[in-house]
Image (cartoon, rainbow, N blue to C red; front, side, top):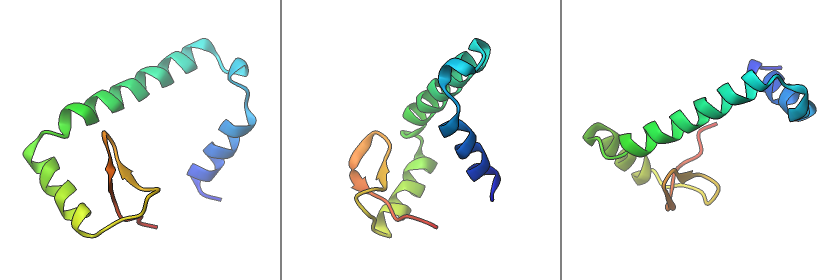
Length: 77
């Protein structure tokens, strides 16, 4: 089992109420920071170049681009 799978299994099995408040506050802050960084960074020229390259590869309906849900990206697996 990968580290990501182990973490996912733990998160699915653990009620939010069982986590310390500091943990959930930090998780919320990290998620908000990630989304804010992605939102601001999408206008950077190098990010546009990478996005355009990936969009050219085509994509699937379940792999949309953040903040632009009509753009489909390839699923890498």
